[in-house]
Image (cartoon, helix red, strand yellow):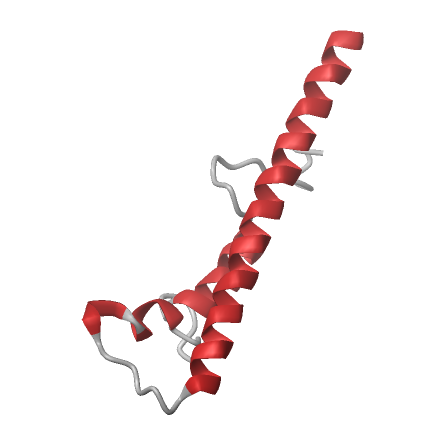
Length: 90
């Protein structure tokens, strides 16, 4: 499939669509309407304590991204392990 350009292999953890998803939430490098959560707490800016709903949303967004990254790493390790086992059986 790689020779027919159906799938692509890269040395990054996330695929292009996954990178775009993380970029939408974390910064405005790719999307002008991104949430830019990374820069909202940068440089020691003090958040308004009255905006607890915003902080809660941000916290759960970070938590979601962390879980997605951990699941991706786990999935890649599982695929790697299965590939090695398959090669040793041949």
